[in-house]
Image 1 (cartoon, rainbow, N blue to C red):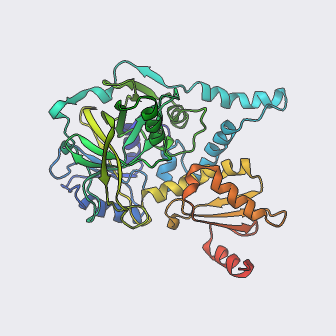
Image 2: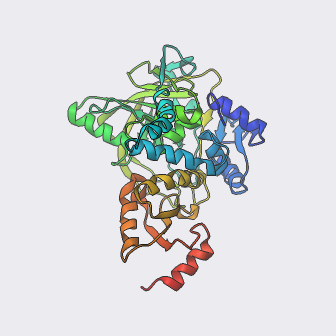
Image 3: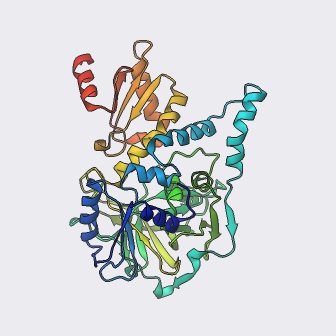
Length: 420
């Protein structure tokens, strides 16, 4: 599926019966979560809440509530086609020298496509049609979800965080949840190994005490959102990758208050800074494990302005015990991971992240075993291959005659072939 921006994607989903509008007032406080949870478990459509109770801004939810919609967001019609996306990433991650003229000629179209998708910078953009500054920049005007009864405050969940460190020319895109703690303040929950946190660390080391510019995009096009959660090679920017998925260059515009560049078609952009000395206690929040997180201190993001399109759409989600949207993302992105892993470990036959395993916490892999200890080598290789797999608690390795996506076969293999 090819589309121009989030609104075009919504329109196409609606034509396919993959999006439904809810005209009745629904509260962002708990009610949206309950409705979306029921719809997702029934493998239902994306939802556009047209009249959130107490707000005049519609809320888009359950956008990636099925693996097929994730695939559509990545420009494909089904998750099987995502293997081709994985093959492209594997090629770009470790390109092999052409074996000859014919091989070079065959690879040229892929390289040409990548080179032609550099983002286009524009001087004016829909995401800056409306600007709130000063006291007008108030998060209370946005229909931010309060997802679970034990959550401490409303939570921004689909915020695409844009940063740039002092040591790299390219920007980093990441999805980090943000607890609302004031009219213009949120807590930026980025873990220490994440790209945004690393950019912030490098900034503090090089410019001690100086504020760190940050932009948070809410309502980016699906390709840009998914590019931020895909293991894109360092040589390729997430914006460039999004253009490849979408089939058109990503248009960017410079923020009003900093040099950061954000998607021109975004619905809402929060511009501001993080002061190195300002932190706050974050949480607890319901997480995709089905439990509430522990509290911890993270940097505070101070919002200086909010820019948006006319009649913007607020994009939101929730996380909870699977199935939820992160679980559906995991099922779809699994197909991207397989070619990447096979490039490094050709003996891998198949790889599966079961959604019940909370995205990355369990993996099942089948290999063509060639020597004693081969399975252990593959296990340690997987753990060290992608940063996503640092959360993987369990890796089950089977012979190549086992279908790793069939729990009956996997359990049979464990109980009959394992010698503890």
